Image (tube, rainbow, N blue to C red; front, side, top):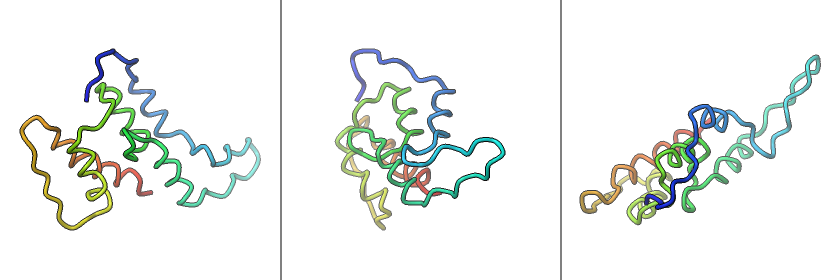
Length: 119
């Protein structure tokens, strides 16, 4: 759904910076001359990724920024209904809705979120 008020648009640089930002629970980089800290465990990335939502759907920072650029504030009903089965990899998902109801995003959003969440 598009919002009536024009929110602040996110620049491409901000989208890239958000996608490269460390997870909130990861330690900062080591100062120069010191060995780097051990890499964070995969669950840490998952918790950070899951915390960025689009109407309650875990999409991560890159997709959230892209949705914000398009002024999409909340998912449409078909997008909400299709997200979890597609994101979790259910073998067969039928998405049927009228033209203009958001089917393309209903299918693409969980697929992209799943790909981006995989290290």
